[in-house]
Image (cartoon, one colour):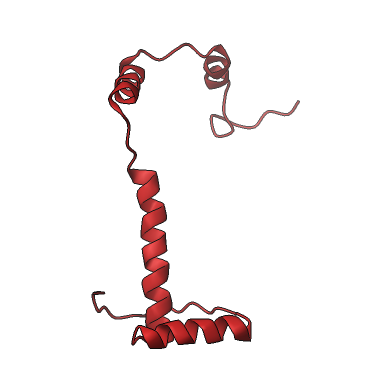
Length: 97
């Protein structure tokens, strides 16, 4: 069940009449307003997508490889080292070429 909070933001959605009829019918079957139905389903989809970015599952072999990669010293990146030695845009007064 969704927690009730004060709602102060609005999202406008433009859809074709057939899509609206479909959403209305589904909301009616769930005994929800259209807004409640859309919000509940959009939040469910959003949370699922975000969870895919936060959690991942590895078997034992993959976990060992992942741990080894984390524990390994960083490899040298000469191009990045050169870039970091160059003065940046905000490092000093501009000089004309």
